[in-house]
Length: 202
Image 1: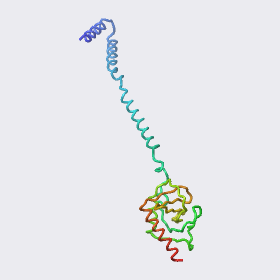
Image 2: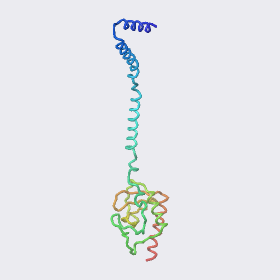
Image 3: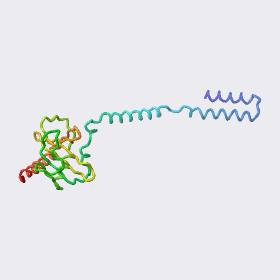
Image 4: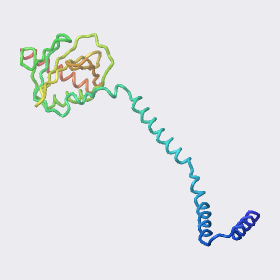
């Protein structure tokens, strides 16, 4: 009530000041405008701070996910080795050394040329199931395989069958892949059967 009484006195004092009606109207408008603008000038800053904090948190989480990704998962995918390429034929040979390559795509008494859909599916499944391995293999490779692809360069690889595990690496790479146990067993079984057929026919 006191504040209201004080305001009434202020307005009475204003009325006594000799001024034109227009000036009085303008003064009143300025007072009313100032009263209306005051609450708007005090805009809350917390929502803006919270929004900025949320954006920063999202950036930190994104960076954490990217940089904490397992290096293995960033390695080359084995499914890209053959991809969707059409295999026109496969040349298989027993391997001599890690550096030499016996299956050069031409028929000899020590190589087998295979054109078989079942074999191609077996080989593709084995390769696609493989993951990069950190294994160090001291033994000599067991097989040399060359996949002749339609419209692409051939894929040459070395295959190891060590202690029930199947590994391979491409001739132009040092990265070794480990084939899954189930697919590796079928893959090696097929390679043994094919290479045994070489000796049986010669």
